[in-house]
Amino acid sequence: MFSNGETMSINDEKDLIGIENASKVAKYIRDFLRNNCVAGVTTRYIDQLCKKEMDGIGAKSAPRMFYGAPSYSFYSKNNKVVHGLPDDEPLKDGDILKIDVTPFYEGYISDTACSVVIGGKRHNPLAQKLIDNTIESFQKAISKCKHANKVNEIGKAIEKNTTARGFYVIKELTGHGVGRAIHEEPTILNYYNKHQTDTLKTGLVIAIEPMIVNKKSDIRENSDGWTLQTKNGTFTAHYEHTVLITENEPIILTA
Image (cartoon, rainbow, N blue to C red):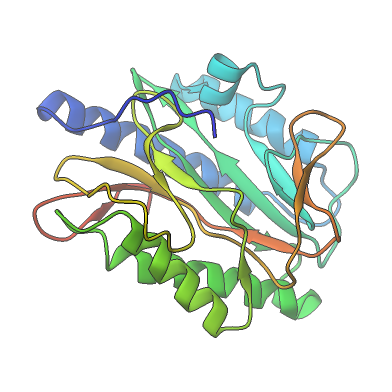
């Protein structure tokens, strides 16, 4: 997904402070937008809130800067997986909305995403189960984020936990390195590939983002040229954090 071959690695205190600050911005905006997603508002309105907050902080939308995205963040409803564009349709109770925020701040980029059931889980219990499993799969993956471990152990943990709960990973979409560009090496698969041999190293910054469905489905691009969605209309969930690999336990920078 748009990988440019670069790898973000923390080389000094400046890098560490830079990616930490960008991640604080990403976390703040993600949570701010999530708290404003209620029935009756539109994602276009939410995106204007995103612009206002970014402007106030002095951050920019990395997808707009580098890919020419027509929005400040992405909002993917129901069967839309990622890169959903804002629209004028009011959110409804029971919608599952994925919010994907990628700010550029003082030279560094952080990436984070969450999923929310509009109106609460009682309006869509299945969607909430998907969200809960996606978060759980991420947490299983974090346990594999140690110096010298193989990258493919992350995908193995995500896939194992997901399938054990009766759900499916979306194999066409992946996590990635992040920091100086939006998508860098290494590719972080959400399933196990025995042929992936690269390893995690101290200082590496990656975005881990399981994307899960309750029924197997191929993915297609919407006519808007951005939105990726399931072909069979099944619901999807998405959860993402920017993570720093250290000599000891990983640091979830956007938590």
